[in-house]
Length: 124
Image (tube, rainbow, N blue to C red; front, top):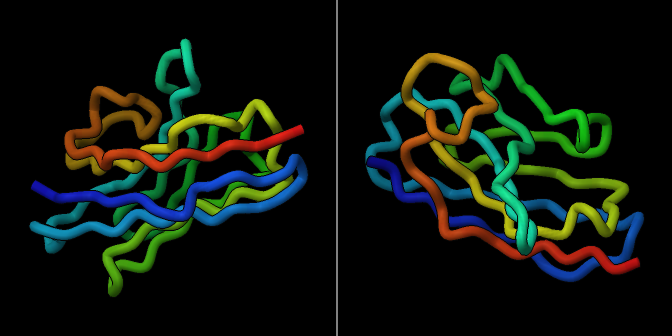
């Protein structure tokens, strides 16, 4: 099992930027893909972005493509989500998660370990 802790959320004006971090501890020697999801009040959790264990492949939801960038530093056991050109509709709690199985990077139920989330609020 991997323990995940997100940080970097906060309040930002529309058009601004934030960088989220997710630090993993525990069985970090395991190979695992990492994803970011978000959940806005009254809405279901939605996929944001993911990166394979090697960092060789990234994937994004259409709603954040060209604005967000996911990356990872395995030496630091950390995954990042750089968020640029933020919009009010990006307001949500952002969660990172670890996935050990094969299958789509976009399916939340395939991710086993989850962080506690970090709040991102974008004002208009």
